[in-house]
Length: 52
Image 1: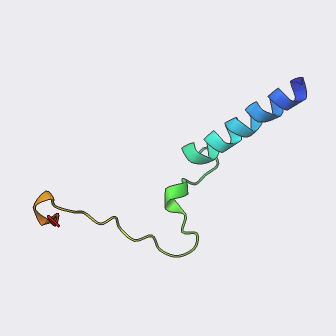
Image 2: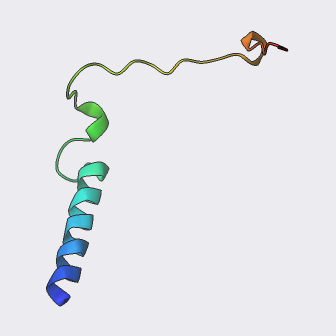
Image 3: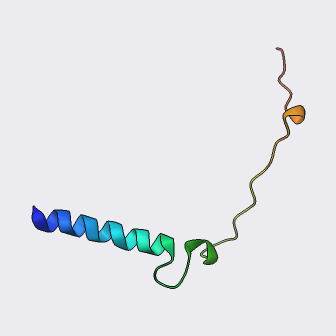
């Protein structure tokens, strides 16, 4: 049981370290796969609901 708990904590720390940039790169700086599209922004005035 101790080995399981210790391994889960170790994996958690390693994943946190990857996200925090402890190992030399930040995940947002890497380009894996296709480029990500920018999110679409909707203006409240442009949204029209039909009354059918």
